[in-house]
Length: 451
Ligand code: SF4
Image 1 (cartoon, rainbow, N blue to C red):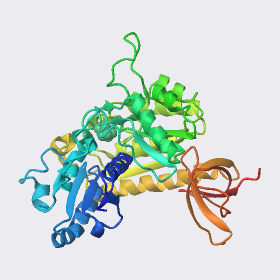
Image 2 (cartoon, helix red, strand yellow):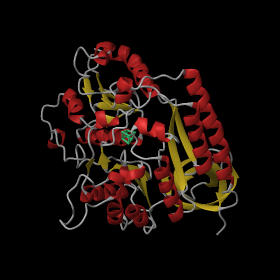
Image 3 (cartoon, rainbow, N blue to C red):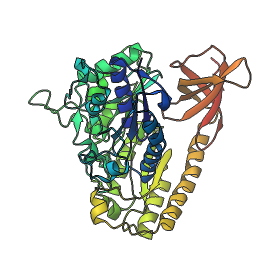
Image 4 (cartoon, rainbow, N blue to C red):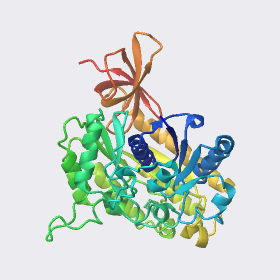
């Protein structure tokens, strides 16, 4: 059976795209391998949000070159956010640098990849089929883990000045509720117990759809969650990534009435300075952001909230940076993903907002935030000590003691929990109650709770 290999970097949307492409290729008669040297088709699913991710992809291409030249039957495709509408042209810098790449496919343009396979009779699936929100809408990934990512809205309409995503993934397109429900049913039949509904700004779900009834509004994220909430076997529902102006009271208050919806949010702030937020065109002020955090905490006092921050954005003064630092110290997030600004080719910021801060200063600011957050995360996690938490088992490994297994799962608030349990007593996907016995900045450890 011919084999394919997919290498993925970047966000959860990329992970979901790779899983879907894999499912489609399997339906076309191919088998997945983790060894590129065995594969007839190698796909790199790339990310262009940070320079580091681009560097990883170009390094990977460097290692594939020899393999590709030695094995003429091998095909290499690059897809994802590094690929723009002109990348396939011969004069594009990327295709000039890697002329031996066989296909350049923008996110979800799987047809460009399937064409490489030279299949005599393309099954219906392989015909270009775009249902508005998703390519190959009837192909559902084959999850082997108890958790699954389910894209519910593609693209982004926000156009933050530094961000490449709207230029690569296009405008917001929501998938129909019935299609999302069918995909989740397929996951549940394979043992999935937790789904994460994905979108670049997930609370924008449904805005691009017509109203359910001309007198009412469109269906929103809460309506979607309510529609899947009754599915048998589904234990948890999560959502990712939040965008403050789209987080309406209706959505949040509705979510709080659904017990399977977890109290965990990924809510990027990016800066604590109104001037920088305006320069980024983030579309909200610090006060509006704070209001949404307070709303979440009023509904779920124990909510786990993570955020993203960019330091060293063009023009960020000492006072701007201090405002970010102070906001993080005040709001005390469970986790902060911090990155030093680097211009992304093709964005407004790259063209109009000179990258004017020295790398040493960016690095100093980044480390200051990391240092602050290590302390905050340690303190928040220490609050879990001796508490019983519910986890869904995601991984099992042999423990030091042969009678036990080392299990890993997450709390509803997204805390990573490691614990030992008697071998064979729990399986992936089982819910377990764990008493937390040790805490650190990045994870918790515990023992099965006494019943
Ligand atoms: S909200 Fe802004 S940062 Fe997020 S994907 Fe859209 S444009 Fe990019």
